[in-house]
Image (cartoon, rainbow, N blue to C red):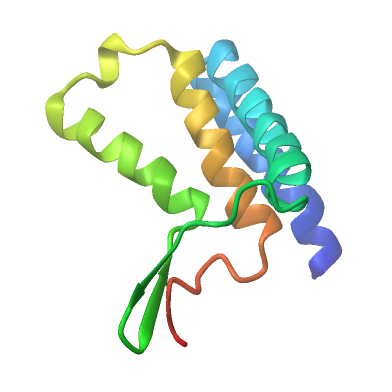
Length: 113
């Protein structure tokens, strides 16, 4: 099942994004690769730490899929979706896709210390 996930999930995502727009698909690829390179060169080397907020006994981990959602949410609410380039929206989609596809603990947001 894990091997099927490695090929089917990205393939379906790419096909859907190509249906939307070629620029959107290129943006997703670019956003995914940029996120991957950033994590390897900056986060894994310890230059920057992941965004984790502490609240007493709890900690809130802001995964990059949440950050991408926080960027898209006001865009959707404000009605600016149609005014932004599809490439930019694809880059945000690539950011979200990278975390959900690559991080096994993408769903762990609120944790006990």
